[in-house]
Length: 186
Ligand SMILES: [Fe+2]
Ligand SMILES: [Fe+2]
Image (cartoon, rainbow, N blue to C red; front, side, top):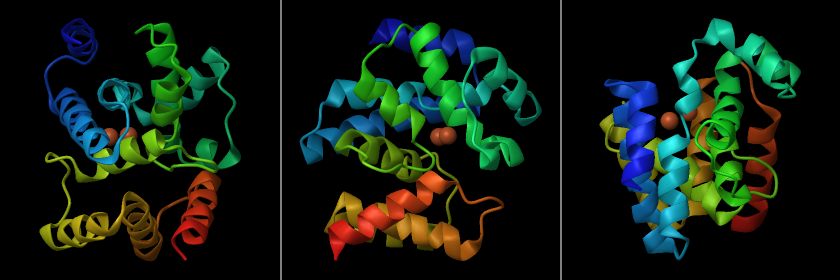
């Protein structure tokens, strides 16, 4: 694990993005231990989830095209949403992670998706509750309270909150995940 930490550190350099990746890795590991998932897969997915954030928004469409990553029209309209797919690409081709469960969790860490796994859910949540996340204390407290009920309840709370606050472009995966979460919870 130290070797992968070092590689990611070398790629991202010092700064908030690397600190965030490390914080999410640790949080994902902790959640995996709590909810019976594989802690080391969770750690690796957390560590790599935002490596695609290295490339600025205005380069993301070009990079995705170059890498042969299929894009949805929502992603072309709002390239922030592309970073999860670029992270997955880099995880495989730059960092040598070929495990499908890990790659899946990286790929949907911002939006979740239909047929999400428990590992997907854990990495999605770790990204939102990690200690470095700039969330308002009140909102974070409500999110953690929902997590006391279940990871599914926390994810649904987060998605509803995001939709309520208004996102520039709604990714279809987010809506698919919301529908599934509602079916699971109710
Ligand atoms: Fe991200
Ligand atoms: Fe993140």
